[in-house]
Length: 109
Image (cartoon, rainbow, N blue to C red; front, side, top):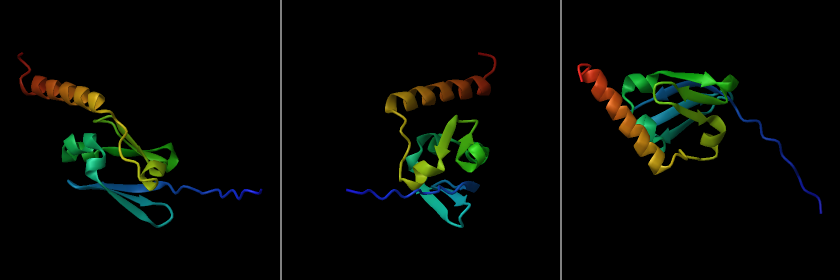
């Protein structure tokens, strides 16, 4: 039995636009991919300034958001994979985030 192996070259990210509902990434092969923001809860909880503070990583293999500690790979998006973060981890992150926001709002505490 012979097996055909096909090597697939994954395009790289060139530009990112995040709206209140969608994550849009323009790819090097001319395509754009859009996925619901709901796939990535940290982006849902982020404000627009944080959503816009992204950088392309790994020569375009993914995108990183420093403010919310989120990394998303192009390959994962093309495979249809949403965030793999557990509910426990997300709740811890939200709790820490709220505590930081409260401390910033009331520095005298």
